Each structure stands twice: as C-alpha cells, then as structure tokens.
Amino acid sequence: MTDTIEWADRLKELPPYLFVDIDKAKRKAIAEGRDVINLGIGDPDLPPFPHIIDAMKAALNDPANHHYALDAGLADLRQAIADWFKTRFQVSLDRDTEIYPLIGSKEGLAHFPLGIVNPGDKVWITDPSYPAYQASVLFAGGKVTRIPLKESQNFLPDLSKLPSSKGVKAMFVNYPNNPTATCATKEFYKQLVDFARANNIIIISDMAYSEIYYDGMKPVSVLEVEGAHDIAIEFHSLSKTYNMTGWRIGWACGNAKLIAALAKVKTNYDSGIFQAIQVAGIAALKTPFEEIDDLRRIYEERRDCLINGLRSVGWKIPPPSAAFYVWAKIPKCFQDSMQAAKAFLDQTDIVTTPGVGFGPAGEGYIRMALTVSKDRIAEAVARISKIL
Image (cartoon, rainbow, N blue to C red; front, side):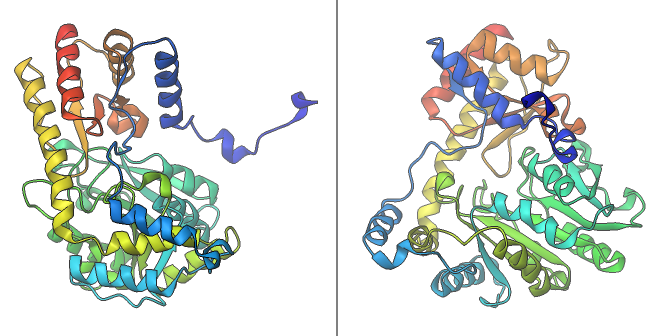
C-alpha cells in the first residue's frame, strides 16, 4: 500500500533540510561515544534570563493562560513590542495594525508568502541564505530567483546588477546575515527601499539577530528608512536575544496591509502563541538593554578565541560584525564545503555547516556557530590545527 503513496510535488522540489541532516550526523557520532563539539546549528547554549523563567512559572499557575490564545496575541505583548521597537530603533509602530506576534519568526516567514504570492510569482532570495526562505516561496507556488551575495560587496546584493524585476512580487533580505554574519548599512536600505517602491516589490526583512553585534556597531532596521512602511515587513525573534529558541515566540511588524495578509493566513492555520509564553515574552522585552551587553561580550570573547586561534594555525578568517556565526573560506586542502564539513566531523569530532547548504553561492565556505563555551572553542581550535 505504501508504494502507491505519492508526496506532493512541492515536497519533491525541496532538497533535504540541511540542519536535520546535520543533527542526524551529530547524534550518530554521540551515540558512538565520541566527544562531539557542535559548531553547527545556531542554538544558544546559555539559559534564558532568570526573570523570564520566573514570569513563565507564574503564568503557568494562572488558569486564564491555558485557553486558546487570541490570534493577535495579548495587547500587553504587542505594546511591549512597540515600546521595545521605539526604544531600540526610534520607530513608532501601531500595536493593533502594524505588529503581529508569531510562534517564532521562522513560522511567520514560512506563512507570509501564502498571503502575498500567487502561483508563478517570482520572489528574490539572497544566496547564500537561510534555507527556510526557499521552502516558503515554493510552498506558496512562487518561483525562486537567487541573488548572489559576494564577499567583495560585503555580502550585500548589488542593486545595480539585479535581474529584470518583471513579475517579481517580493525580495527577502536578512541582516545581520545568516550565514555570512554581515550587517546592512542604512544607505543600503535607503537604496533598497527606493528600488522596491519604484518596482512595486515587497521587502521581507528577517532581523532575528538584531541584538547580537560586536564592537558597538548596532544593526539598523529597514523600517528606520523613510518610505519603508509603504513596502516592507520585518520579522523579529526573541530566540537569540533572550536565549529562548525552544520557546517559539517572535513577531512581524511593518506595513499594515502586509501584516493583515499574514494575520489572515495565520487565523486559518493556528490559534496563537501559548499565553504563558506571551507573558514570558513581555518580561523578556522589558529586560534592561545593558543586560544584553553581557551576552554580547560572551559571544565576542568566543569570536575572538576562534578567529585568533585559527589564524595562529594559518586559517585567516575575517571576524564577523554580528550574529554568532563565523563564515570562513574553506582551507585549500578541501575540494568543497561538504568535504570540509565531513572531514571536520570524521577527523576532529566537530560539527560545522557546509556553505553549499545555504545555496550555490555558499560553496567554498563553511559556517561555525559560537554557541559553545570558550573552553570548547579552544579545544575545537586545537583539534582543527591537527588536520590543517
């Protein structure tokens, strides 16, 4: 009977999800008793702040929090998001029309194209990029066009060399960028907004790493640019900033019509965020910004440990300006990124992510996450030095 079951064509179009395969390889190595250092998936090893956990515990004891949540979330949560956004970016948002809470930003990014993309519409995604963008477009019936990001352009798309915009409905951008760990400038966003408005292209900005940055260089939001509210929607997450990856809470904000499209999709797909998590999210958003400084210092120390350690053995890598990833050209002893990642796991028990998993333009690179302790990073450097 199972031989007659056919998957939908949309699933057949998708490659295997990169991080699932990496996790399987990691689990197999651990099951064999190997001492694995996981520099693969970007999942913080640090716990949420204690006051967030305390807020969650208290919320769990409130019977009111165990019913279906309102789709748009608690008004207090949307107000906390608006207050946070105003403080961080000096941008005012209407909590009722320009903000929509999400079951993690990935969920919102996946559902949003269903509200704006018709079958056959073209959508630009940058390459390399987070694999979920491609899947969300294909599930909506759209056609993906990859816009290559080059190191010579600081991994920003060259707006003067974009293909024809005919039939293009939207464009994904992601800064601070995963996997390249670079930031966009306000000047770039000004040019992007002007281009998008002139060509009636929706900007989908993924800013999940907005608060993980180094050397005091705060990333900017596209919504800071005049005219962006006409054409842009931006996705934020509590996962990385507050070490809440498993809690699944984030939000979308921006143009009210785009928010309404996302809301209409979500009301047909889910029943909102578990309300106790919303209460914890409010506590997270009220965390003093200086407490996040301590988190950034930890990642900065890890970054410097990895970069300086690898430089000492001849692997010269530019330090990331944001996010908790190091994006490095593979050493010349490897033919491609898959071979490099396999060698690191097989010969050093270190999990890394091959650049080609983020798109064809990622070939020749490897991504390493700073989500293990400084001691483990130092151990990783010592192991890598033995095979280089």
